[in-house]
Length: 284
Image 1 (cartoon, rainbow, N blue to C red):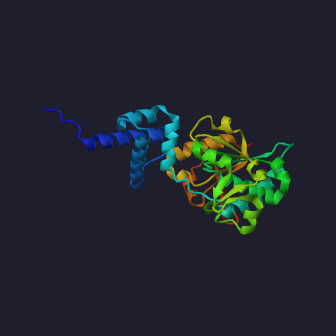
Image 2: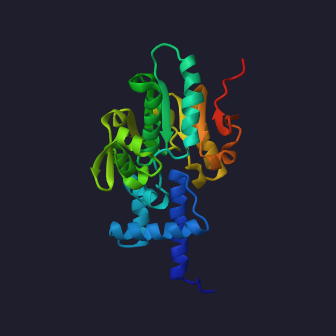
Image 3: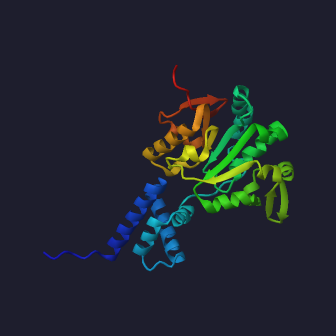
């Protein structure tokens, strides 16, 4: 019997499967259903942008090039964010979580606040604005805020600290005036005291070295990211977070992600309608 040569469609299917496997292994992302179409479009864009001779050539580039994997990831993840997203979490931070951490604070060590998957920086800068409004200039001595994301392009934008007015749509005119300088008719740049209050780092949440890369933290914001992950990947990320979160520290996830992250790694608690997780210390 003659072996049938693979059709063009079969080749495309095989190449897509390889790409999906590579992305899942490196980034933990899954692409099924409608999201598979998004991945197909992104692969076509990057194949053209890199002038790869063929899909197979591009897949080899993707396998060996971390920057190319980052570029592809930027196309297949939603980077839409804005200042003061889910404001009830900012109120929870200022009214409950930070006062408790500050009361238990020992010595002069600042409270470590980490924004994982921070994209272009709107979330960690919102945290910085919130704590400076509550604790004034001493906030920079009391808290250390870090923004971290896989996408180096987005981290570069975050460090630049300038944004289109669309990203400021939830801020009052008073807060825009307080924390931003007008760049032009459609762009605002952060005041230096806010921009300097946040440091940024490029990291992969699946990296086993995450705790050593980011250091011990008291509070982690990890919002609107786990929607891309399956249960084993979510569990692995949560275990990584647990290793960098101090005993008694807090984890805040997106409102719609609470139940999908209640996997037994942290203890789920509620405060005035806001749900979050606690890294419960080991039993004595």
